[in-house]
Image (cartoon, rainbow, N blue to C red; front, side, top):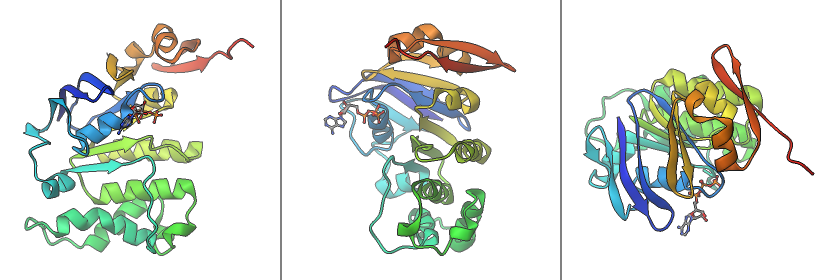
Length: 249
Ligand SMILES: Nc1ncnc2c1ncn2[C@@H]1O[C@H](COP(=O)(O)OP(=O)(O)OP(=O)(O)O)[C@@H](O)[C@H]1O
């Protein structure tokens, strides 16, 4: 279970409080610049919160040693890139690095775990391709395979469906759900959020303005207030589907 308690950072995050129950997928929503990436970075202890606390299963992430945190938390950043001359399998194997250093290593074969992660991301045929030859969407899926190979307790995803065609968007979020890993995912596509997230947290100018099941939160009123858009919300077999209006010209 991830708990974020009244976290503030610079002028960017303002007393953010929310939680992600174990095994659930929570969508982190909000307009550009609302603080989604900053919050994910604060949760991963990449930036020190000025106030408040983030705990993972009761442990304050600011106090967990970096090597231990690397075994427990995987962050899939928005622009995860490398200039190194690596194959896709090499990149996915990087997910095993924190475990290799661990004296708790359980002796399982890292290659087998990485190959299984590639298979789950539908990338087996790319294992020996050079990273630089992959398309944007293939890189994104390979980065998710790296994160899954890490076998983290907590997965932090920053716009994971960027670059992906609709088929792979659905496949990636299905894969995240199926993995059963506790996940906080920044998403821009609100219809993907309603389809896959157990609950959503909406940020606006660094503050949480709404939280709860997507159907309760993503109302036309909230979409107008937070995103400044006109929209209608329709029920599709119990799942809300949002239709946006074209702005007046
Ligand atoms: N290190 C920093 N110093 C100063 N300002 C920053 C820093 N990092 C981010 N910001 C600013 O904080 C605000 C929130 O940025 P952040 O990247 O968290 O937003 P976001 O919700 O992820 O946006 P997007 O949807 O565009 O990716 C932005 O206005 C950004 O310019």
